[in-house]
Amino acid sequence: GDSVTQMEGPVTLSEEAFLTINCTYTATGYPSLFWYVQYPGEGLQLLLKATKADDKGSNKGFEATYRKETTSFHLEKGSVQVSDSAVYFCAQAGGTSYGKLTFGQGTILTVHP
Amino acid sequence: GAVVSQHPSRVICKSGTSVKIECRSLDFQATTMFWYRQFPKKSLMLMATSNEGSKATYEQGVEKDKFLINHASLTLSTLTVTSAHPEDSSFYICSARASGRYSYNEQFFGPGTRLTVL
Image 1: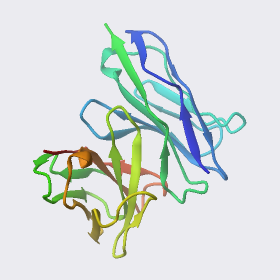
Image 2: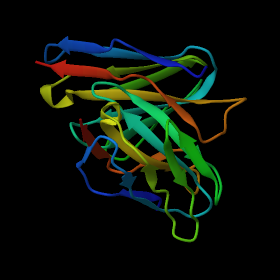
Image 3: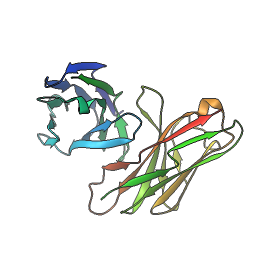
């Protein structure tokens, strides 16, 4: 079945450091891929998305490229800020899940000044 | 655009009582809404898919008689936790899939409801 695997956290970085959070997926068909962010005590916000192979999603300095050959959608940011501290979820929809979102386990990011 | 609200944001109730949580799409019509449960430091677990005008589809292991879902209009879905017990305490999040101008697979999430059962 469809699944998403994220890099284990927590991830702790200093401000202005480079961030990578790995995400791989398994799916039958061609899913859409998403990164969601959850700030403490809040619901999920869509951070970025990609709907087909080689698409690059980007928002707020974050980027992720849909790599069909490696079934990956790694999240990157060149210079993190304290305000980026949150939980990040990789997710896919489509494939055999008929539009349901399948989430990774989430990665807690903490950025120190 | 694509805003989803939930009410209440927090609720505390006594064991044995029922609690209703509302999920509204404020500026779009949602033919499908989803209800998730999130445990501390865990990912979201899909509980059920709610389609307007029809019965909800529950995921395996979710008690449909305990978690009643009603999707009476294109902008409102409700989750009622019946005879709540402390183990039902959790963060409940809804999402809505918009028809029309958004891609089919995109969901918009509400801010969540923190339920505490004493």
